[in-house]
Length: 564
Image (cartoon, rainbow, N blue to C red; front, side, top):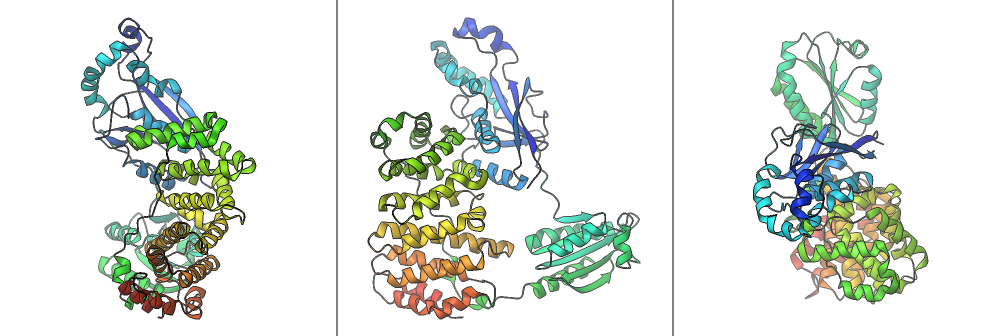
């Protein structure tokens, strides 16, 4: 787990003290400041104005903060935080900035909720409404927006980026070096031996960095200064620099000296080809599959909130429900830009309590609210980082239970689809204990012969799982779903496809799931062999021959792939 780091709220006064001295006589209410806020984390200040911006702490055009408020600590990895902030960029654009309705404080409130599980102080978030609640505030609004726009939406003078770590690993001891090689036993590795007194090393090193970036997760590239890590240089008898040594799956492959970028590039290409030989599937034409959008299928329609309230009765007055319905109501009418994330910690506790004690008739509208909110990447991102994924684990178990009624299972499957709207959740969803409940829910739903809407949703969930498996496989050369679970998935999908004789949408989703789940799967693995035993190719080809049920071209492509 990443080390905990402090999260701070930087608070600025855009009025430079004027609000405190003049607000009472002008507005009839006392306002201490016109607040601008930002989040400071890991040596970077994050704020919203001309889009989401970054700076070194205290170096923005707003000057020094009037107050620094400790919000807590977070142990989230920098990569996860960066992915979450990236997911907010579509909501917090330069064009959507509104001084009173969608401003910097809404951004910091959302980010704080994700990082530490609580929002920023309420008097800051509610300030615009306090001003607009006065007649003079309404009159001043156009003037304030004009005067403050150059300040609030100025570009960052010196953008900063979080330290994500170098692609090239720099080691100072033999223990560090050997630990990296041990971790690369299923990959390839290359070591660049250099020294401080080697001018050619400085010339070739940028090329080494470029190769590291291009290789990504498929290779481990290491830099060793033999003047610092003498034990490493001694063990490998490094007599001249630069010297390069490469390994493939734990076995040393090559060794050479010299600063030729061309030799370095050629040798690295050969190393990658040796470690990752071309897969037989790459010779199969699956153009129709590859032209399919890999965007996750989601179910974001917000239910009629008045009807939900009626179904919930007295429970609709619970503060957790009131806050959640207010959020969804604003989301439906004004979009994510004007809908601050509610108190998700309170909602999570409330939902877990309801799972344990409420009837399916009450749980259905609650899960439907939850389902709609999870289509918002801010909400699904928060639950992706919840401790032990308690709320989602309980939801999936509820949906997979044998006695769960159709309507409740349907919204649970749709909610599971929405978990793929954030890049933060799929890995955890497929590689933890959640995967077992997820696959149980999927299998039960796919084989429900009585409810085609449930099978459509389940085929969408299967497609979302398969696209994520394929994305990790093709981009990072890693299997995010354990082989036994992947075989369970394709076996369930094949059986469901064999039984499906009603929905063209279900057939298409399941055929694409098989294609994406198996394409370039590890050679010699159980998945490919299982599909041959199940005669999945024949099943797919047969569906393509049924008029109005299967796309003949797609089914022919996928059947050929499954028969390789």
